[in-house]
Amino acid sequence: MPSVLIVGCGVFGLSTARDLSRRGYSVVALDAYEPPSPWSAANDFNKIIRAEYTDLIYSKMAVEAIHQWRDDPDLKGLYNECGRIMVTPMDHVGRQEFEKKGISNLRKLNEGLKIKYLKGNDALAEICPELGHNSLGPEQEFKFNPESGLGHAGNSLKTMYLKCKQLGVKFVFGDAGRFTGLEKKNGKVYARAANGQLYTADQLLICCGANTGKCMDLKQQQSATALYVAHIKLTPEEYSKYKDIPILFDSDMGYFFPPDPATRVIKIALPGIGASNLVADPHGSDKEISLPRYHNANPSDTMPKYGYDQVVKLLAKYCPDLAYHMPFNAKTCWIGDTADSHFIIDQVPGYENTFVATGDSGHGYKFLPNIGKYIVARLENTLDPELKNAWKWRAGAIFDPFSIDWRVAKDFPDLKDVDWWIEQKPKL
Ligand SMILES: Cc1cc2nc3c(=O)[nH]c(=O)nc-3n(C[C@H](O)[C@H](O)[C@H](O)COP(=O)(O)OP(=O)(O)OC[C@H]3O[C@@H](n4cnc5c(N)ncnc54)[C@H](O)[C@@H]3O)c2cc1C
Image 1 (cartoon, rainbow, N blue to C red):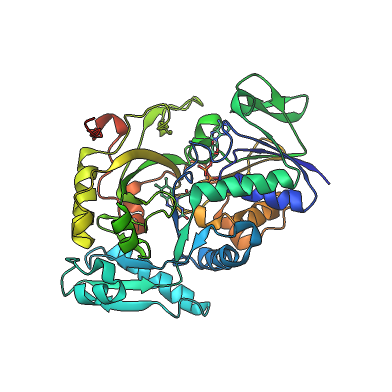
Image 2: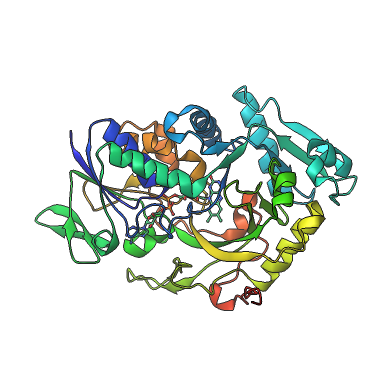
């Protein structure tokens, strides 16, 4: 069996490493950090796993993924089918359409049959008594899908990594694993690491998430987007009250998860207020491109001051008894956006046997169980033509945050213009 070098051990890299090694390939995988890497968009308490998509190709893949989240013994204990409440203001036409189409796609697949269409604060209190003091208002419609859930994100990366090790994947981390670029030598392509070491294999797969565009020239087709998360820690009494709530997704304000069982921490995400980090293109074009500025090296990149106001308003709207909590560990996380939210899974033009799997566009985590299968199919040139076309290399297709209806970007400044919230440390 041929050998494959995987660069980047996040969701796409680990899922592929598992599938390749199961099929008997010899796999070496590089990363700057041991999983879960602080640079991975998925290194977090939890992420949403849902199957509502406007594009049937992702609906089918997400349904397949959810079945695996439920049943795959490798992922045991990492999925909680807690359900998801979706609240979208009636004037968010794009997001409303996204949800409507997403549900109708599911129904075409004979799925999503338990989704309920509901209206008003009393109905919300009935579905979720813990949110009984919500101020949704009597006219606001919402949906409840009991067949969505959350993945224990960082833990699942770690579990996949250990599984891959068990299957024989060889890992290299640190400077010897930190990819700095592709190099051609005597007709072969090599991945260069920060310590100068060169790696090659029969096939190379680069999947460095939002950072892929830093390490290699993606011809402007991916743009790193900063998204913000913050956390609150519940008291034991609050934890007992809120531990079984569904995910509450308010597309106007943000969303929060049930508290993490190990730490009693609720993660709150603010997807509507992304940002770019525009820098000179390291690959020499005359354009600026957005690249990640990772939180571990920039701890003051927390969230904008108005992000803090948003967190307080979100809690006050749905669970006012928690709105007194001071958020902590607010941080900037990075996704790799594309113009059409499709992934980029294709051969790199001009580099023989070299592929990229990137452009996650903020919706890739749920596919941890199965994206590897599709990436392997691309490497083996057996990928379904519809998927191959959707994920093809799209040089110059420029991301515009305001044209992605399903994400509802309200504001999209550059990091240099962000007025950062400063975490209040408790007085000793
Ligand atoms: C705030 C937030 C919320 C999200 N919510 C959801 C959600 O609810 N549901 C969902 O499905 N998805 C969600 N996502 C998206 C999901 O996390 C990503 O789609 C997914 O992590 C992308 O996988 P990836 O493998 O492409 O990149 P990543 O998981 O980011 O992994 C990239 C890997 O490459 C490594 N790397 C980077 N540069 C180098 C280098 N130079 N050398 C070596 N290694 C390198 C990193 O260390 C990392 O391990 C969310 C993302 C964010 C940021």
